[in-house]
Structure formats: C-alpha cells, structure tokens
Image 1 (cartoon, rainbow, N blue to C red):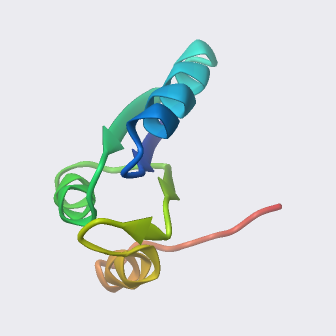
Image 2: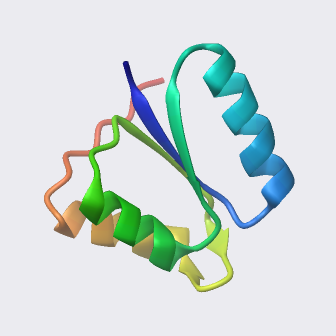
Length: 78
C-alpha cells in the first residue's frame, strides 16, 4: 500500500486530499509546516509527497531541496 505525505498549511486542502486518498486505500499522513514535514520524512518512508510551495515556515522548493539532500530519489511523472 502506498504511503502519501500531504504538506499544506491550509487545513481544508489537507483534509480534502486526505479524504479522497484514503477512500482510494492510500495511507496518508499530513503536515502543516515545512519543519514538521522534514521531521516526518526523516522518521518514515513515503512513496509520494504532495508539497505546497508557500508554507508558513519555509518555501516548498527549499524543502524539496532538503528532501533531495536526504538522499530521496525524485521522479516526476505526468
């Protein structure tokens, strides 16, 4: 089963995406901040990270760079 991390500071967006993905039988974890997201990524493996660009404590692109620095292989598919 795929594990997805949703990172967005807007609770409505997190809850909406979480509900939809859980209905499709995904394991979902959510975070409202860059700091919390990075802690979660250090503690568990995720198959997918849905990452907002504008977060209250950091830029999503900076977070993406930190995730890559942690050794995660990023693969974008359309």
